[in-house]
Image (cartoon, rainbow, N blue to C red; front, side, top):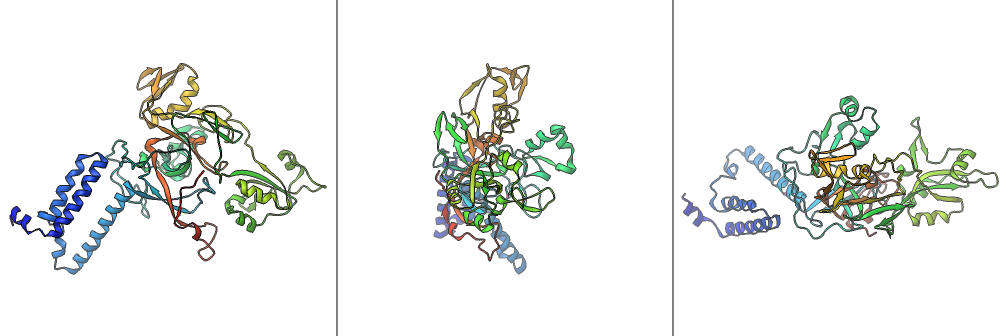
Length: 489
């Protein structure tokens, strides 16, 4: 059959489908600002009109087994391509793994994350298995090919990251991972190893293989955006200040408190009524025995009272519970209990700083932090004063996130082999914090989130599971299903 005959034999139905896919391709190519995508129109023209390539050759096979097998293969391939496309440019599933955003978002919430909110990021590692972030399910191993890797580019979205937005992003310091200890930041492992990076890399028995992950294959995190590019952030007595102005804490924010009772053991039912997870009030002692976070089963001793700044009443030392995360409303509910003597917000004592920047011995704590300037695209810092501090604060941005060679010798900064008196940032950066302020590893610990790490904005809770309950004991939180995940501050 000639080309002209193929054109004339195409049905109206085929032309309609070709027109639909052509229009969608044109719109997507315009959105992505990529004329190369228009080549797909030729593909659709052949699939629906000319059929020069026998795309459905298997449908004519007389072998039933082969035909049925190919039907499944065809359906699976179509589903994988559709999921990859939707997951990359529109929506992505994300499960809340930790309590850093309690009570705004709960452990066990499954979120639909909109990538259109801030604009989807074009794939950096385009050849990857759908729905697998970095590791193949069941079989293990990488779920992506390291090559090719494309440069960072973001398509147009509905808006930009705003203050108090809850944001899903790739973990900035998740670029390097020890496979046997993936739950611990590699740079934290290096800091605590006597031989530093070499000690971690050489001890494969303990740490496993050390791997590098591209930006879009790093672990997903979710926090609330507190500081925007170009602003200075500071915490004083657990209050946040942006450019010197007070920023109220989110309504459902939590802090750790010490509870002093008259000796009453707080029941698991009361903790459950308050919405406190079992992991927040049960821990393991050094012998592996499960105990409450009270001082001991016999109550508090005099030394514990003195160290905690508490007093006995009528010769009764009472009982102390440490590090119980509570919102302001939960504090009010406990204060109404007759057996509660004291509720005191815990404060962290300054010492050798393990807060960002790690090498800056500032004495900063989770409650008293900064001020710290957040880098902004096009803004310039100079290295003519406070150089030690600026190197500690911004070296990672310049080297790891913006891809420059960086060295600091004899009080002078060298960028890409040349002495530099200043540097102009290419990316915007954000400062993220958890609403569970005393139980959140966030920008206070590992620093800024670059714009190329932003994934999207949670829009919907489509499933919520209570980890402390069984399937027939209320595991599914029915009231949270299909509720908005846009939790106001």
